[in-house]
Image 1 (cartoon, one colour):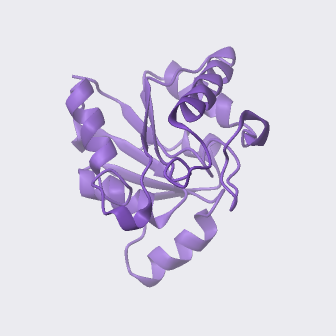
Image 2: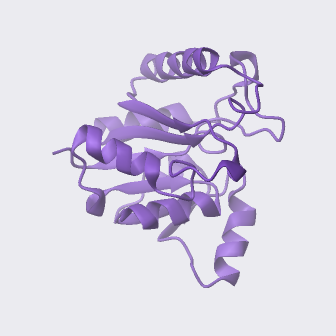
Image 3: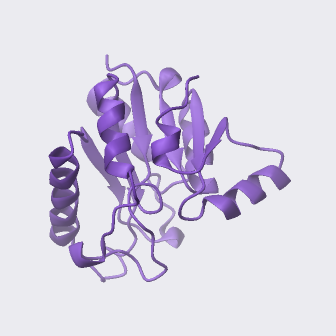
Length: 181
């Protein structure tokens, strides 16, 4: 069973988000120090997974093979800095399709659990949205960590208003990687 598992949202956590979707490598920009954060987490013994909603696939803006090629390039660039992503799980569906894998539903994390034997009660979910925090909690993750990059500042405000604050808030993934529970 894998221990020290960290689930990372992609857009807004690892790379800059875009309201027009990130659909090519030319539009993919790492957030400063995100690759170093991933390398540091790996060096500390963590196993990292990316869990991401990618409705651009069902919007016909990008094909599955193009998305997977983009993810391979992301993984290679992370490995160049000493990090490792164990696997990428993504939901290609539109919000109105009602699938079980689109965050805030926990389907992506549950699929990772089934495939890799993860003890979710010890896992971290790191994201920049309310959906990420709800997903992590619904899956039974020990910690829901919000980063203020991407949509994090807006999510922090909404979560606070709802009385559902994350377990930890960090300015970015690099700072989140230093969170000691």
